[in-house]
Image (cartoon, rainbow, N blue to C red; front, side, top):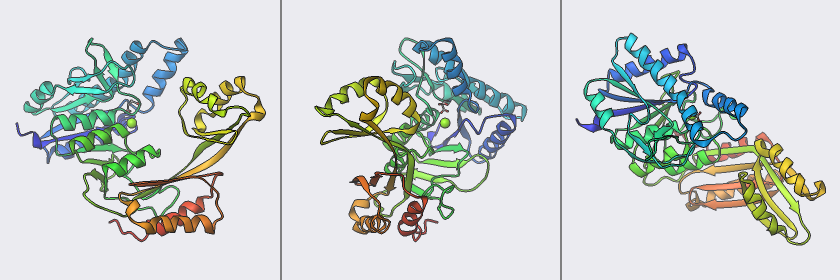
Length: 394
Ligand code: ASP
Ligand code: MG
């Protein structure tokens, strides 16, 4: 079989959430099947199924057994894949659903955050040769002991791109409830433009800044195996955004503003550094550690603040810890460093608005500014206007 002809389509949890949406997904698959002979579909669990399963397990045990959690969580994707196969068959299309292990997804041993090691595509290829639409459960695999593993939250994207790489597919579609990748959040800035293309590095930066379009591990797999990833909406026919290899490109692609950050300031007369190992052991996702005079500063997400306060305040006096809500703005675009006008424009806006910077970092494809306070939405508007609005991406 000429494997160049394989197309991989992935549908996220909200796309398969109920029977009405499953019908829309089936229609979409059928319309693509008319053009492409070999189709592999990867599905997530329906709606909030995975969250619900985690909640139920935690009702039974505060620390559920790792192995059994993977057995439980992998059931979500089995429900959506079998429902979709039942539906496609009723509509007259031959389809077959395969679990991660039936599809040859071999992973390492790490429960709930397993990494894909190899994919034995024999079964998928056999079923494609029979003319079937092959539906694979995302997010799951099997380890060398023959036990079920899962790939970490949002991992179905990674299943899809990894299968596309193993089958040397032309590209991998990631269908979801968003239209693609924008120059900034279109809910905040109506002038935001959809990007027709962007590089893997740019997409990784955007994903790491918290834009929830793609799972970051899937972007890494796409980059490594040169698989173009097309993000599109399940619910309309608008063109999406293509994440692909790019040789050179210097414009600013996207600006991400994050107001969900807490700057923690611990005051310690003797040795603020001593808190580092304590924090490390807590296992809370903290970033941007900085020690200055008698203060240790770092950032955490707003969502972990309560848990964090609980633990920390047992150890420290209240007066020694301060929490500030701050904003972080990331300006992403390959080659930003080579274009000095970008930084000039950014600094001009910061000065004009009398904003106080906490940290400023510049790398090959990103400028990140953390402010000492939350900044107004109009700052994002001004940055977008000066850095993105003149670029006509379409
Ligand atoms: N169902 C899993 C989750 O909710 C995997 C995925 O949706 O990609 O994290
Ligand atoms: Mg998802």
